[in-house]
Length: 187
Image (cartoon, rainbow, N blue to C red):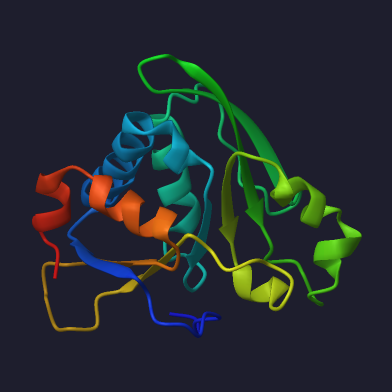
């Protein structure tokens, strides 16, 4: 797993062991359920960290599908950012989401050059892969999701998802996840 770019202690933390992609999808679906339950939680910055192939884009695809996105969900590796239109909550409120992949950044200043400061200042759900590539430019995330191989010797668990809230909004998002998800396979 890549080194964290976040220094402060999290306000809330949930660690999840995924035995297969279905378990990873379940965590993404639980997160989507929390966003649907309280649209105010959807004005959040979520960062995703992990080595190549750790499942960051797969997690985002599961999350966006659970939020109602239909059609192709592309990896933004070459486009840098992919926008999505969501409808959230019982009121079917229109909401914007952006999925960014900063893997190709060679210099954190590319964040400014690409106009991402303005884009990420808007209300909406922001999902950022490879946030460490914009070190010093990207605001502190509400929720940081680290994905990696399970290193604790659990032979049946293929992946570990480590969700850390760094804002009151992120902590509320973790608390709003359905109880079976927040307890089953959680440590």
